Length: 397
Image (tube, rainbow, N blue to C red; front, side, top):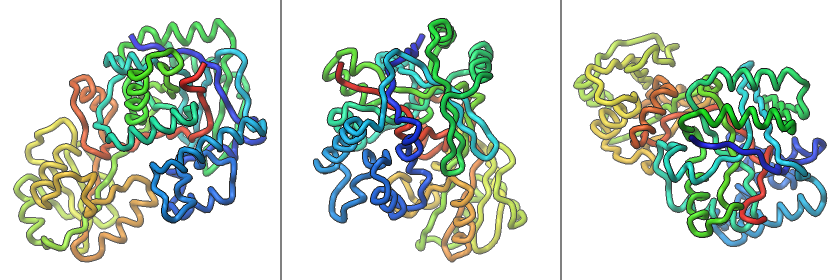
């Protein structure tokens, strides 16, 4: 069984926490992030995105790591953050668009990851692993938790509901999200959380595959306790919102007639109203293009996930796109604002917007249990915990 343990967390003082926390997905462009970096010297973007302050510096340059280290030195030396004297858990509740997500911030054991008690479903890129590992070694701080989930456990959910009946210790709003934090210091409650978690068979990585792989690599290089544990946001599966990533495909080498002829090999095709943007069920897709809007219904699914069939039967077979991560003809669409923009863009010639139905947690868990991987950008999972909201001292006693 995987474990979750309390820790001596680091957190920005209440008067600074709103300025410190940052989430790159809240920005529409790198230009917006660069403006935030120049305007706010407390933003956690100074760790993850400080290369945007320079015109000719790559993300993996030495100066990037030095600036990240200087950022933490600044926070500590100027008393912008505090470290808890005792080991604690946080119960963290994020509310966005009237939907709330409640889970626990603690430390997972990277040995559980290595022994597949924490299960993954994505391939990782060595360059990204190296970047994260270098950041951790240079700064000795983890400021972004893994997002882990598990099959539903009512007794743990009841415990968290009991905790949040009390007034939160910290609450603030930023970028349309409401953040509430309860600090769990009571020994009995900490023990109860650990006891409940101890009866869970496995955790599943919903976000943070590269961070988990980086910590695992560092622990292999230096197997000491201070490198063994990784900060985690653990949520019950029913606390997740799992959205699909849609695909915008721009190709000049194949026209609409040829696309439709090939689609007919694997899909039943029906024209639908232009306002249709959400497939109603598994095995359905909505195609929007200059010629209209169409429902594509799979004739014969070959895979568990719609996105797997889409990659095979559409991207590879029709457009000869064999790696959607690296092909600049494909753009990934997730948020409502991006969908609105993509629908407009799909009215131009040789541009095709494919809207997918979301997969479920059970689908992801089954893929993970079978040691399989999902295609890139298969899910957009919420909540996204802002970086710098919780911090862990890493790699040093």
